[in-house]
Image (cartoon, rainbow, N blue to C red; front, side):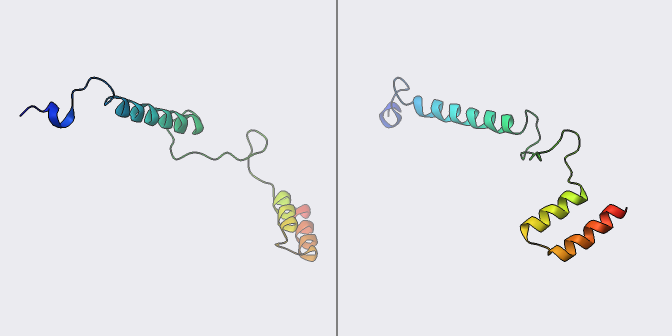
Length: 87
């Protein structure tokens, strides 16, 4: 039996689907590496906004953020602020 009966000859359209899949996979890999900063560090690294070199928040910034979020009250804020400033 001739095998072209079941699969058809590889002339014409059948090669387009594997080619599109390959292009799609290559594009996804490219976007992953580009988003990760160009390195091989996957999963992606998340950078914190802030001045270059020191991305950590100061104790005062953390305290201000907690007050703004409603995690602490004004009395606790004032007490903690005095302790931070006395150091």
